[in-house]
Length: 106
Image 1: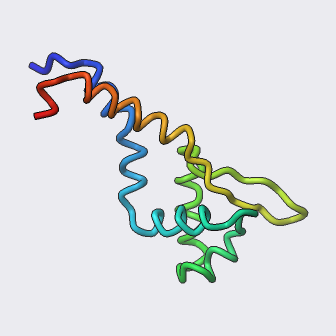
Image 2: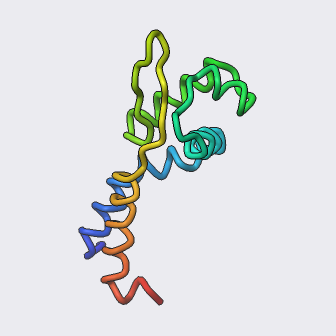
Image 3: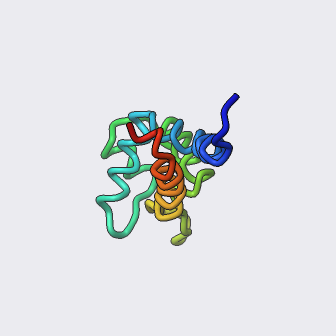
């Protein structure tokens, strides 16, 4: 029986985030968005990354659902930007819990 319920809860909370970050295409999208100051449209991401528009849209939706990407409307275009501050705090919480358990640091 596992005794560190806080660690288990933190791991469970991070599963969707870590799963999303494990995909190379989503990593490419995040890095490309992170390199853009003004944000990018799906069409621009498609050209830069070399994925199809449906594939980029699919990955953007997953990233948006996890609050890793935000969207703003400019005219008829949706502009996407990287927003990972909350995700970093969530992962940091997991790291902090694990650091507190000296047995896990061996």
